[in-house]
Image (cartoon, rainbow over all chains, first blue to last red; front, side, top):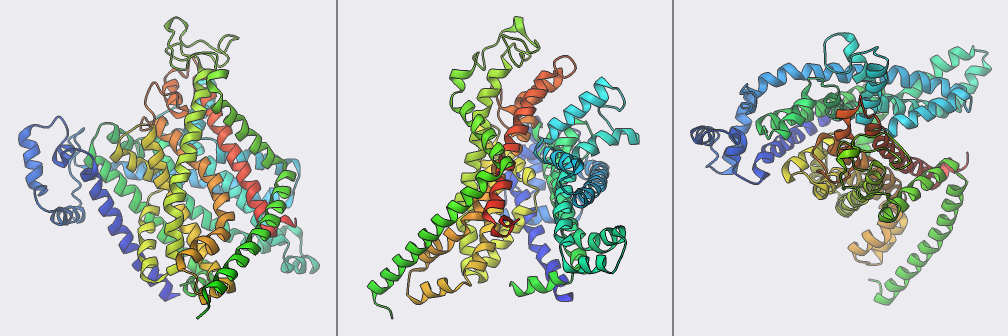
Length: 311
Length: 302
């Protein structure tokens, strides 16, 4: 177990280095002068030269990368060409809002998904089962931005119950979180259902029933605990997907998070912000996956043994 | 050391046996798939869109990029089945032609993912060791970006446009195939017939591509069906963000993005293109579910 944790931690290091190299490369792979890309197309010649000197853009790539990493450790991510504010300040402001949206979406998705999955599994082929699996299928196939617009149209434009865009009260959070969580809810419902069905077929469930335990105890205490293992894995993996989906959801709902910042900065060719936003999203994704894997090793000790065997 | 002709003979018999078994297997898969009503529904949806894409110029009532400002933002009518957009263009015709773009992106991105990802996964899994360790770290780095984010990064570097979206979504699907094939190869290479082929002195390249890879084909087909759906969603997302197909290309995500401005006065501009994306993705997902069940002998029993 300890070996597995150490190995998993060590494996994160090359990934983070690789991510930083890729982000370092973005500006240098775009056709044109990287100094112009960083300073902005409308920057004065003096400013462009200043940037070139500060970042040693006339030196070799390894030196440039060294400077890039040094600046990363100092939390210096450059200056936005749009707002002229430090990128780090922008990210510090916006990142918590993306996390807020992602967590709310995950909360909705797991509440709805797990309960729908349990009911579907215990009442297999009932009307509820068929309907909820239909909705789950819809949630997985519907493009998130379309779902966003349809919910806006229904609840904000036509019914006027909720605000269409922006951030402020908890009412602003409902539509974006619902939109973002829909696909994940569908997935969680489908996996909970099939996992529950799998577990309910096993011998220890028959034994539990034979002992005369109430069906509620059998389902919620014996079966659910075992059925949730694959569900927890999927929830962890989905966190990252939600971060990616936040890019689209934030854009539709004018939610001032990192995702919307990324899209705005790509369209405005504000590359220092692009780098910072991509870095933030990728590193949080890596860290979330790390936490999920470690948590999983605690929950299910078989995992750490298996992964050692397969090496 | 085996005689060359013996090796060749053993080679051809093992191939023959594999082909014979595959035929029986294929028959069982098709039979199982045809009994699956939702999978057939998915196939029907895909076939419908394929026909729309192929015969778009004959079915379309209007030129998809011809503007008619006098008829802008009209709701659905007999003349314009899905209504018109802000430039008076016929939405039905634009969605028909959009099927070409979305299907094209879905298929080509999967081909890119297959051509790059499958050999990487196969070599990494078969040879193992340092090569595997190195390749897996590269894949880890790609997986560090949620799919659509990786596609966004590639488009940021290459620039916007349909071709670049194909490349971007293709690159974003490479790690999926590399991981999948590596896993299959890892379990297959332990099987007796692979050791036998090695003992007979068959070249390793031949073992990998003729004896090992054909046995990974099931999961790869299932994944490809789902991956087409995912790529279509990513491409539409890029189009919606203004990072994909550019006007006047009738790409579904781009149409939605433009129509969004007129949502309060002309909701049809957001409803129909979204419905088209949804149905196409649903079709591939349903078929994928069916294929997975049909190819998995365990689930066939139930």
